Length: 43
Image (spheres, rainbow, N blue to C red):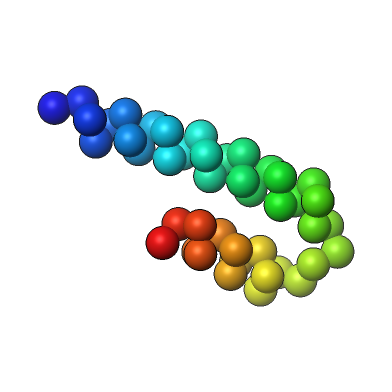
């Protein structure tokens, strides 16, 4: 019953760290690169 909630919580934490890592390391990259990386991780 709680498995989807736990997986969603873990996914949310992973995406948060991935997004902040991208912002910290790739400040000079264009917006489309950030969108592409975000969607490729999400899929």
